[in-house]
Image (cartoon, rainbow, N blue to C red; front, side, top):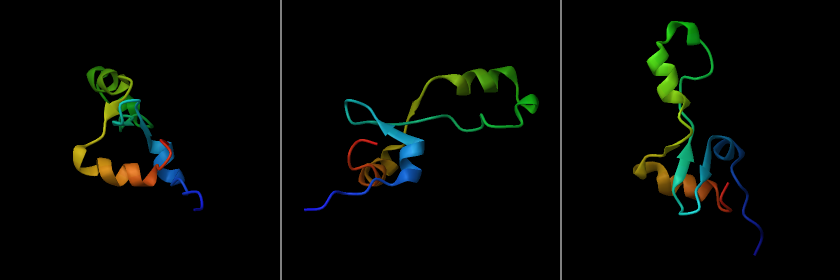
Length: 67
């Protein structure tokens, strides 16, 4: 059986935890930060968030070896 290919776009956005949950980074941290409040920037700085349950199975198919 050949190796499965990892989706590179998904591997840059998501990773899997040891327990199998899907981690993602916060949105709205790239540019236009001068217009955002300190509270918005602080809350999105928190390390990672868990991806939505409805998308989890799809993401896991894109990352067959754990991303």
